[in-house]
Image (cartoon, rainbow over the protein chains, first blue to last red):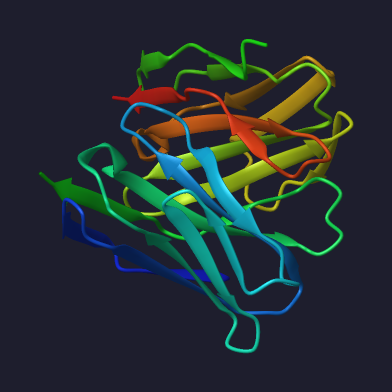
Amino acid sequence: QQQVKQSPQSLIVQKGGISIINCAYENTAFDYFPWYQQFPGKGPALLIAIRPDVSEKKEGRFTISFNKSAKQFSLHIMDSQPGDSATYFCAVVPTGNAGNMLTFGRGTRLMVKP
Amino acid sequence: DAGVIQSPRHEVTEMGQEVTLRCKPISGHNSLFWYRQTMMRGLELLIYFNNNVPIDDSGMPEDRFSAKMPNASFSTLKIQPSEPRDSAVYFCASSFISREAFFGQGTRLTVV
């Protein structure tokens, strides 16, 4: 059963544009919502994360918007750059999970054209 | 810290052979995860350990897969016998209280 649904599967954006990736989750027992970035040949790395007590978190050009009632969260990349071209994964962590077990979405392959 | 260290980086083996993947987590981290990444299925959690104890192995595909963590600084994922459908990139990750999981570079396994 897929607990996290991510869209789109791929995205092409012009340099300077806004990239938006969406995720929806299927139950309410999660309390940590990170986004990971993966470059070819590398492991995923944490980009930004949010907890459900806030609706938005911004770090530089990256913003997470969180809608608890809709069980959705999204990643916005402002002023997208060619160096942002990578695969992005949303994830969820169960409430109280001592091991911080991540369940990932299927990923979005972003290409930023110069 | 050198980060999570996985070995080997690449492994090519013949169907039916035993394969052992190795992982050294970041010192001080108390959770360790094994993930498998394929184009078809994305990033799948196979098993995770907390304080060296296996907590959830429901993602282990079948009895051919086994994982051990004999101490806080070492873990192995073994496939015996290997099959072509096991071809994937296998990642090890570790974490601590901060909830950020740190991933290794992965092992690309090809079973021919």
